[in-house]
Image 1: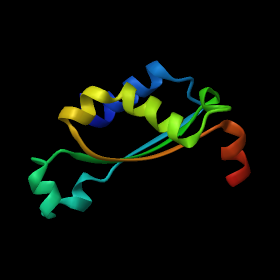
Image 2 (image 1 turned 120 degrees about the horizontal axis):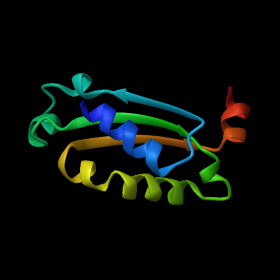
Image 3 (image 1 turned 90 degrees about the horizontal axis):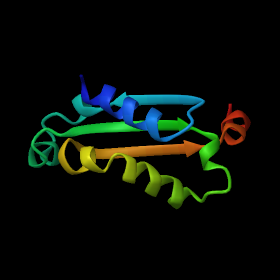
Image 4 (image 1 turned 90 degrees about the vertical axis):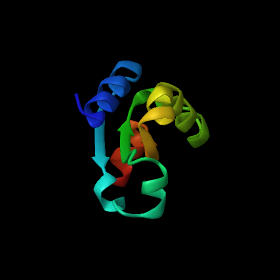
Length: 94
């Protein structure tokens, strides 16, 4: 199972997902000093659309995602970009 697959499995088990995009940006950072320091850990960008985020601040949404991915953030993920929106917020932007 790839790290991207693990992230998807964890996120889908913790949140009611209406839309999920996981972009693996690790290769964009190959050879970069921080990528070498991190031991080649992954760089990811997430777009998570969930009704679970209704009435939650951006900070609370990010905290919940970080808690869900705690093990991966400690061991496998070097950088994580997060966009966490409600279905209404997502619809208004698209």
